[in-house]
Image 1 (cartoon, rainbow, N blue to C red):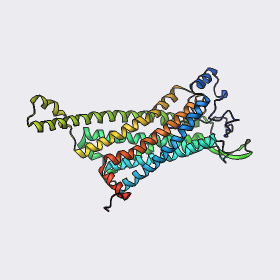
Image 2 (cartoon, rainbow, N blue to C red):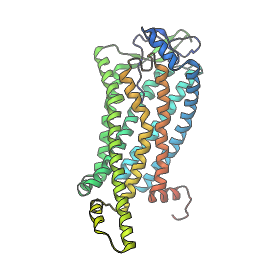
Image 3 (tube, helix red, strand yellow):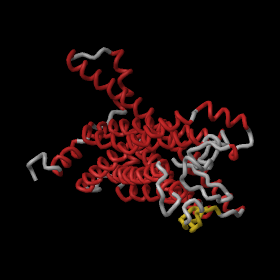
Length: 382
């Protein structure tokens, strides 16, 4: 999630880490009227600590992004081979496509920040241009991944609680429409950002050339739209989707425990040939909620996917809360260094989720594993 803010005065902020105090990597007293906040920010994260963490995170993030791009490419290829007769294949394919695109955007963002750090002279302002060419899209896709994961977990819960009704609704066409609606609803708030900011060629006195930069549109309506966009896509949508995933995952885990308990009791009865009467009541509820083994495997796979997602998405939720609580927690605020650190933790954590998903599919889905092995010629059968 990239919640980014560009200064309204549009002062040229071109990379020159040793000279320009308003570079996003540095702490500048002009960004805060409260000197105590500056002192606190420096105490929390000093310059030396920031640069060590920054270099480590950007290197780690790039490696993880490459792994995510490769693994999600393989997942998409396998799902295309499997076809979309099963609704779950559609939602999982949409998830893989979003994870793949998110990893590509994170790679672009990392490249621009890396060039900024090394003071590479470019015909565009790397940090500012990145906001409209990668940052906004990253925030949009990050929220989309969260909502698709929420949809998958919610759909599995309904399949267990009301299986007959859900099977009539969860058709391939219905799932495809649901994916389009999710993408549309998560994209709409990001669209308002392009009302607030625009690209423009500006003169850079440090390079003595004209470069492409991003400048704000300082109208009240544009500022209002930007605030709505940031709060919606950066706070409300991620936290709400995360809550749905968390609740549904807990319900699925509880249900799987009931099913496992029931299976163990049935196995015990078969071995003893007699079931004590006191166990009948305790097993009746689990017996009523038992599901076919194929559905159970799918539920277990969804639980694994959502659990990894929950762990990787926690930094995004923390960042959303900090953005609401601390006014200076943004790209050009006094806590900018902490903000950038959170960005790179997120850009490392979320691609991990996308990378691990491929291993989950391979381990827990026999059809996926079989198609993948044929695709990479590990199996000889056609």
